[in-house]
Length: 396
Image (cartoon, rainbow, N blue to C red; front, side, top):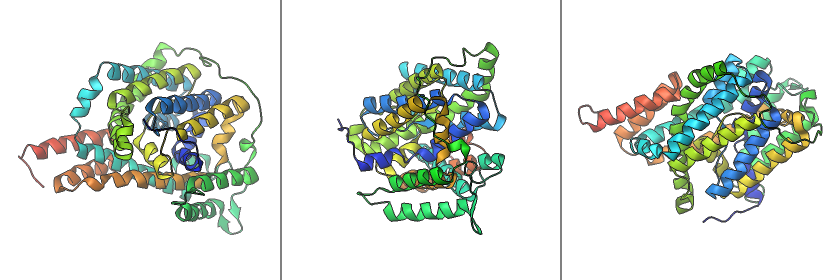
């Protein structure tokens, strides 16, 4: 069993996936009215519990389909909470019944690699948008750095300057063991937020504990909308990316130390986490393969990274209470974009073991369909392409 390590590299690696987590958390708090204290506490507790159980670096991410749809449609938090409970119960059932193991046997490696590559390119593209100030969230806020009081340094837009500096710092410190890149970039970003942040980034102490069911129990109508509009569209991506692709990547990174990172255990873990997150009023969460790649790229090698970032989230939730949302706004979007880009690039490298022409075709089919539509459809059509090619009736 891999020992838990606490050092600078684990600290840096623990920060590697903030580019995904913080922007979506901020969006769901601002647009959907999610409870910031419950959201932060849920993420932190999930990080800690998952690290202690799996004993390797294990990611915690927002469920992107649910989060993206909820923000785009400005859905009320009641429906998001209901979606988290629905997904949690379904994943728990899939895991406990052993159905996930049977499903995983039907998913060939080229399809897994296609899901990983598609996710990687989506993360990289979103990272570039954060730096350029063109993401949907930034457009809605009508500002490239929505939470900064300063938007330019002379003739230069602030987000361009920060993006370039964060990129150069990441490249320079990327393989530095004494001063890891993510630690340098995130700490610099926090310093910029403290110096140039607007009133929404003020860290005001208000110590308090999260409460259970802070929004009450959702109505029957909220569950109906949540199930069909949010939960069911999320499941294909979760099963493909957060379960099968994540288990595969964990085996690649950690080998025998990832003995607990199985399809069944990942389903059960996410199921329990989302039921617990629902009770705290938090957001739906998963174990995305992109998050694992990001943590690993920036130095995480053990469950120590989980304990570090988990403790940070829990402590912030308790010390800042309802004001903890300011943390999600503190690091500039362009800085988060650079972290997101490099995390996606690390995940994309998993495709290197695809050597056969037909396998690469399957991967690229999933990528093409995903970029044109969505990952769920890419996943289905990629699997269909694989089995059609293996039948011998068609060739490329």
